[in-house]
Image (cartoon, rainbow, N blue to C red; front, top):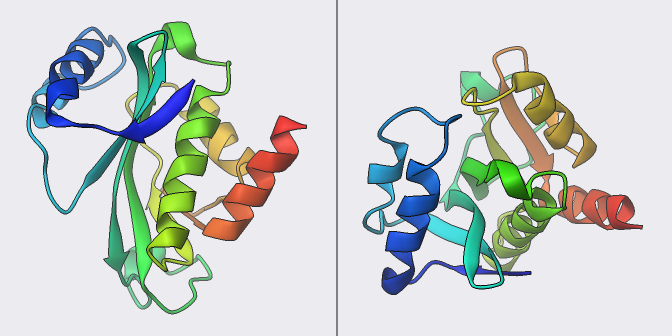
Length: 161
């Protein structure tokens, strides 16, 4: 499996994968038809097919934002994980961890020490909460997530052992 940035020629395959999803809100696949700068889309590929995607931005500063009030944020810049989705047939095989690690690595490359986001409510919440917690994220009462990018990378390395 490889994880890399989506290129224009990859978008139809990504849209197809997302359109087939029964556990995403309708219309999500349409959002991915075109690039949405400053968002970066990274996809997990296996045998020529896209099995998952992570989308986010880099360079924000959420310190002082009441949405993240219960999380311990260092000074910005921060990365924001907008969405992570893995096709049901590819789940429980490490695809989500590969995507999350690639996003955290990209955050560090862009000098963002912290990754924030929200636990997407599109699929089974308990499973998503478990995934993020195991990956090093704290979760606030209002479903916001946050972790040091180095913590995410380290936790994923531990999970891989």
